[in-house]
Length: 173
Image 1 (cartoon, rainbow, N blue to C red):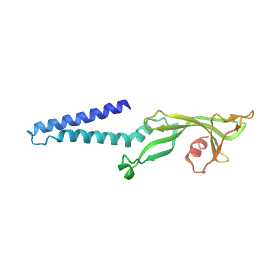
Image 2: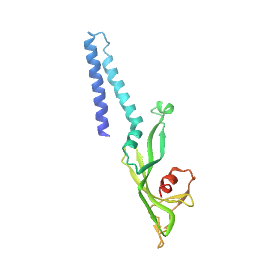
Image 3: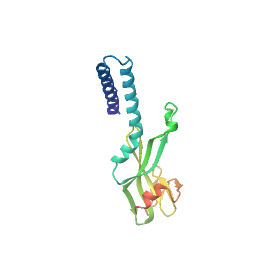
């Protein structure tokens, strides 16, 4: 976040410097407000670029083992343009490198759901997916494993067969 702040300030200063140079080269033909307006417009353009490109830049740097399963488009009142063109402020991905299975419990996969949010470090949520019954459970403090390896005490949520979490967890088995 600090690097983006400095990049935004540098962008504004650079645009202001170019505008000031253009003003001097024009022999003072440009109005005095031209330089700060150019700096402000450059700052605004950088912030827009940074917000709208964050999702794509983040996904491009992820390893192939992370499969995006959902993305949340954000609309905010203090950014009225987001009602016309929303941007992705958070998304979730299944980490296929974390898939674990137990031969005693066929059809169930333990894996990790990685949650990405703008301005925050990614967080990992262990989940279980029952590929046969098409359901998912978050592995939290209340969940335990029985002697046979089955999950006990987890709250299961039914999933649609076309759910991207089902595809990412069960399609790779």
